[in-house]
Image 1: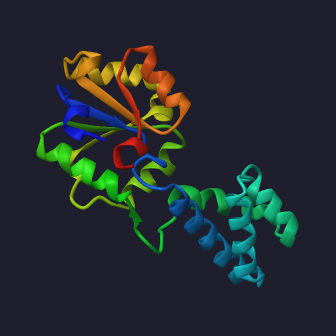
Image 2 (image 1 turned 180 degrees about the vertical axis):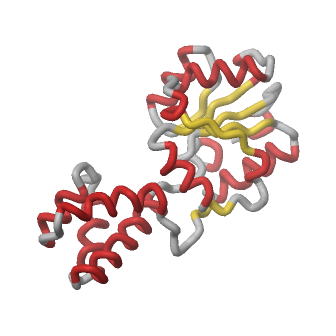
Amino acid sequence: MNLPQLLQDKKLVIFELDNVLYPEKDYLLQVYYLFAQFIEYTEQINAQEILDFMRVEFESGATSQLFEKTAEKFSIDVKYKHNFDLLHQTARLPLKLLLFQGMLEFLQSLVVDRIKIYLVTAGDPEQQLNKIRQIEWNGLGEYLTVYFADELNLQKSEIFLKILSDNNLAPQEALVVGVNNFDKAQSTLINLPYIVSLEIYR
């Protein structure tokens, strides 16, 4: 990808978080690890077996009702669903979350070129903030402006418009970096240039 050409006439870039700037699995698998350790401590059920089961379910894409499946498999009391959900929001991870190397370099180039960086992320705001706090930003955190779509109760396209308006920019002066069809559709609604994150560091 020709980055200078990509960023020609761009004044700001808007990113989603999960699987765009870092791999979300790095967060979730650590949450599952902490939950498995908690259950082993409280119920004396082998943590490694729980973690292995949850990892297989995750890697197969069967994450829906993951707690319920795990609870049934290991006879875990449903009262621990609260702990499972709470860990997603507040877990202190054993390891820092690392940005994709290509995205780290891209973000650094934006800072050097004085192009503004915005993060517009969907999902539970508390959980998303917890992820952001545990990413190793390599000094880039101070350059981020973050919007939580669910907290604002707005569509991403509406937040994009607000960002453009606040910066007095036309759509062609900005760029959205995402990873799914929803992000692309939200950008297309307001004629914002869009690129899939993998295209940046392929």
